[in-house]
Image (cartoon, rainbow, N blue to C red; front, side):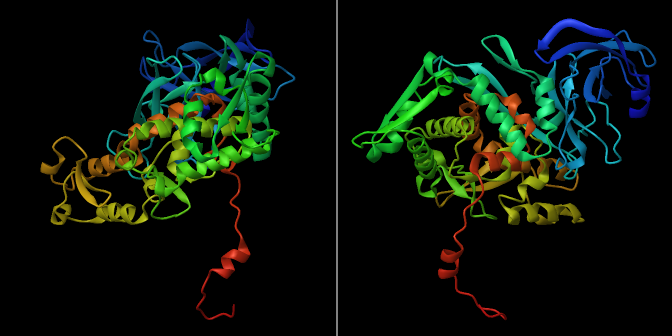
Length: 469
């Protein structure tokens, strides 16, 4: 079907006079609707090397032609590419939706062909195929400096983001440029492009305004929260200079690096109660579901603050002192979350769930649709579905049981905290710019390479084995 689409697709005329940016313009394409596509149904195709998602009009049938516009690069720019990621399971790829120029995920089959229906994801949960992405809908808050938002986990092909970056109503980065940046093979080239966009197009000029952050070292976190949370999103993109009160120093970059290091060290410290080490990797931090108990003085403020700090660090090319579990980087990027992502934060629980798949009679396990949370030593039963404690797990409803468990562990148990973290992060970073990175590249960009002291490691290690030390 993909071959049929590509053969029937051709350019219709020249470029449109409307320009999307300095290096792109719109061009009209025409495609024959392939067999099997119903009116109102969406299907993906390749146009000028770019993957697009086209919705069949209600009055069009298979075999008839439809036309649509896509941005194209001029001759001096690299050709537009669809956004593909080798690590995405089961062929998930991002594509441009021609109806509204939004970027969304589409699923390709394992044999390389497109699964063109937007409804291709099965309704029954499949541990190998089903995928979900976070969907964050921004809302205006009571305070103009603080947006609110609604966060949910939806099937991967039902979430979309903007394909360009706007500033003061003017487009400053178009989809063609983003796609060309993603096509860069080396991580260093992508990072350099990202920093160039932040520095040259998004940062507020020093003469238009800059910020002086004055803090007491003895009250580092309190003063930092007071200062940062009083700023508007525009202020977050201004140049900051730091002053530790009572200390004689000029911030030429060193104080800024120290501030990011000290603040994030405190926030990620397990003793603070906001984050906990994951069960499988002590260096990867996960959000503490009981953070409200640990920090009763409004724990969500800390997560909004941390989101802003992480976004500002990325914007300014600074490093934060905390590595998170993999699925949190995926949530920042809006990447598909799968059942396999359960393994990283808690391998034991993942294996116990996976073992249920091959059981002949699950009812013998006497399970119900609940999860037992441990909040600082006190057990609490959580219903995974309505009235879950009265619903037994059977072979018939096992897919639902696995699905709600995945959703609960990947988002629901920490949704308020994650919502604030993402809102703070996107107060600084435009989401479309992140589409050039995968989750490993984002972690490297935010945290850098881990610094391991080999001599200290040897000094504090007792080794017993067959080989000499």
